[in-house]
Image 1 (cartoon, rainbow, N blue to C red):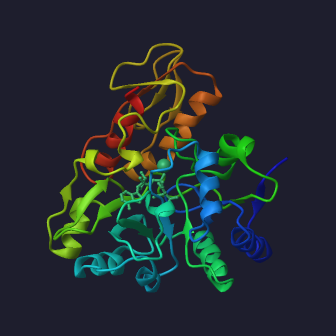
Image 2 (image 1 turned 90 degrees about the horizontal axis):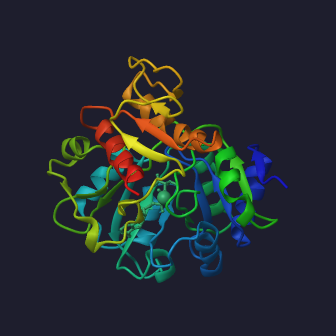
Length: 318
Ligand code: TXA
Ligand code: MG
């Protein structure tokens, strides 16, 4: 059976109802597709872990519709976090804040903090609003992939990856391909200055320009951010960085790099934004074509290029 549904006002309403009734709804965001559940429903959230095959002590991001919902989920919010929320929400940024009593252990992985994000995708926002109209407070959603695999950037990729684990009443909302293509920047806002836990499209420079504070980059070992594990974002094919591709290899490289004879070109992005947008789809297509090796030429520069290199280094380390 197919779980895919094209978005109409009616499907959004039934998706919100499915969430309220404890089912799972995968939905598009501007970064990657998320696998959503009612963030206040312990059993529904437990199913996310089952479907992803993810360890239960990894915290989830709660997706909210606007800054107004911060106070429900978090407490002791520093001024600079409000500034970041004003500047970059809705958008590809997750704020880690001290949790309120309503952010339970099953969301926070037993930690004293909660991750919050207002996504910029119209379908995600409309879904959260419908869900709130039914009495909900937020949608918990990790990326809609199996633990350790590449995040999906299309509804078809979600279905290929998760259909075998979904139940009859679960849904996948199809909103086309994600525009950003890499997961949100995660910023720990529990200290005196912002600390970047995961790189993303909101860069350390943007954080500094917004808050006037230097954003530190974390040593992830003390915090359970699964995207910070060394081996992550991995396709089945072996990813090898910055070598010359030989016949039979897949190749992901900027468009000015020619494709050697016999090499299967998986992506030829012409800008850094396009590189981020097509990367995960290209890695997935390597697996679909049964390739054993994907050679990736990393982009140079900072900002989004640094985010891409961060993900590539993790997908190559296995
Ligand atoms: O772009 C995104 O952030 C996507 C879309 C769906 O919103 N979501 C996403 O979720 O990437 P996930 O679970 O695949 O990655 C979120 C990361 C996880 O590694 C999790 O451990 C970390 O965020 N995280 C969540 N809450 C946290 C917290 N309170 N403290 C530290 N890390 C947290
Ligand atoms: Mg993930």
